[in-house]
Amino acid sequence: MRKRNLFVTLVLLSCLVMISAAASTARTQSTGLTGSAADFRSAEFDKSSTRISNQWLPLKPGTQLTYKGSAIPEGEKTRSTRRVVTTVTDLSKWIDGVRTLVIWERDYTASKLGESEIAFFAQDKAGNVWLLGEYPEEYENGKFAEAPTWIAGRKGARAGIAMLANPRLGTPDYAQGFAPAPVEFEDRARVYRKGQKTCVPVKCYKHVLVIEEFEKGEPGVFHLKYYAPKVGLVRVGWRGAKEEEKETLALVKRQQLSPAALTNARREVLKLDKRAYKRSEVYRKTSPAKPLK
Image (cartoon, helix red, strand yellow):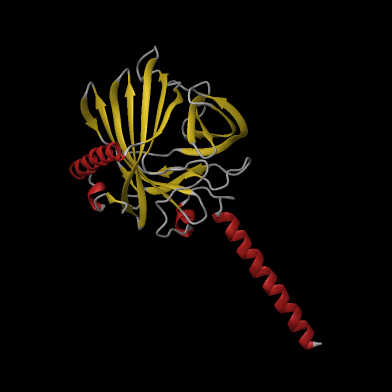
């Protein structure tokens, strides 16, 4: 009888271990992730962290996406044209113990450069894409104004989720990153809709995922991001009675840069990286950006 009871106990213990492991695996694959500090600590990154293959946010070096639309600039009443150019570089940077891929984004309003930013992304082994920091140079009337930088692991800033491995309706909203004052980066997101169709100048896309972005302290203000499988972001919209900017963007061009054009982009981003050491205290604690190879 004792041997049988012992056998039953061992079987039950084995089942509990397997259930626990399965639950842990499911969590790392995005179920229940909230982008918390604990989630980031439990995420597993390896040498492939810069190879971002998430179907909703694929980031292949040399890819350049151009968006056009309009928005109402702060303090104004009429809409202005807007153009955003996102370039996936072939540079990497170590942040908070993780090797990240450097993304360069330029934002033009009424044909004038308003912001030139480098942001740092990495994919964990479960397929979740994380945002580990941003260095944005903001311009006013063609002149540098400020660079509200945040870097995960520095002065209370934390990494957040840029895209879940398996986005599902009904899952908790999640932090896209966090930085305390004076930066105050507190963006959050949730899965808003799935299986949508949207048409932009490039083409019409099916099975589109819509992510709703917001800040908890700003009720009635929501940004909608439309992601097409194996393409990434294809449209930006908004909703909410208190939304003032009312930004709309649509993908107008998607291309793979030539080696020469990618070299030029790398050169410009390295200039940004160099300036950041002079303009940001938290950035000075990071190692310089370097080519992936």
